[in-house]
Length: 389
Ligand SMILES: [Zn+2]
Image 1 (cartoon, rainbow, N blue to C red):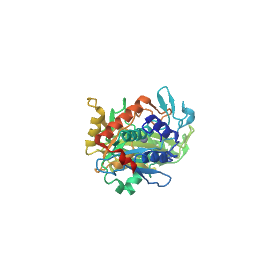
Image 2 (tube, rainbow, N blue to C red; image 1 turned 60 degrees about the horizontal axis):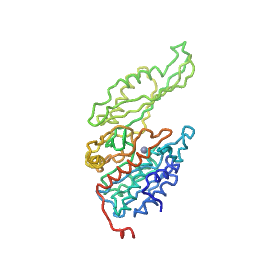
Image 3 (cartoon, rainbow, N blue to C red; image 1 turned 90 degrees about the horizontal axis):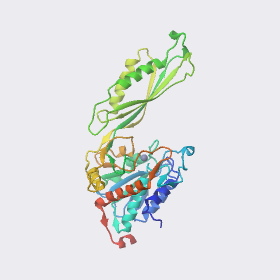
Image 4 (cartoon, rainbow, N blue to C red; image 1 turned 180 degrees about the horizontal axis):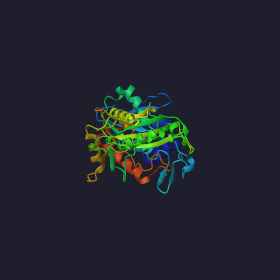
């Protein structure tokens, strides 16, 4: 049997599966086989080319079980921009390079190493695994699908730990206990192309686009909210079908995104946008609004699991992890009901999704140590007889 206590071996093996979303590329089979060595029962929940599995420890699930949630899929990597091939898991001067090195194969690898080490020491960690190959990109059939169609499998679960990279400067300095919401809007404005020398014959969609963007940017979106950053709109693109200097375009589109705290709702944003468009569209342009990827903000109602983790990884020192709600959306939003207590905690996020994504060996070991402390919160010992089932 491989040495699954070795977090470096586990991470290198997981990186070597080129699991570009939503393909698990064999990583799930490897993980399930590893977990079965420790008495886990694995149930696959696959749908539409997406693979998910739930691995239940031999004692089953109870309200103290920590459900460790992870994704094996990664964003694509452009090989020519990498110092080392992204799926070769090259170790260079104490640093491991590879797609998924921080987002988030190292977290899965570290939790597997914790389980293996506990069993080596005759201890049984009360940890279950829920793993998906569909977190990056359009994540319709990953964790969202499992929770929608198979929530009965998780009815005993209260504590959820997601291994997303949350640390900032050192491993364990930041835990996420909520997230701002996210909302995308594309506005298409149709006009009439024409020669710029004859402005009366033009209906330039950029004129109204500029007014709309100005109003959007200057509107005060929501209020301050405890534990959250302010809500913010970002205009990310403006595009038209004119590429000459003497003609107006017949259409243009604007793309924008909101990151918003619980003082705002998706409905309120949509309502305000309608008003802004109406007020600025005195000339009656044809304007279409396309809303995409809606995610509500959420915040844990109870922080007792987060406080347990804070306590465990601080090791008696007063360097307690910050409880944060910053950053982008993740699978965490699907657990955002009062039923679960959710904490996201993983490696440093600096190189996530970038070329040369990497993690240092020190951080890898620190992550395993931190996960071990979390596992020890409610661990049980067992006799070696227990393994002979
Ligand atoms: Zn991730």
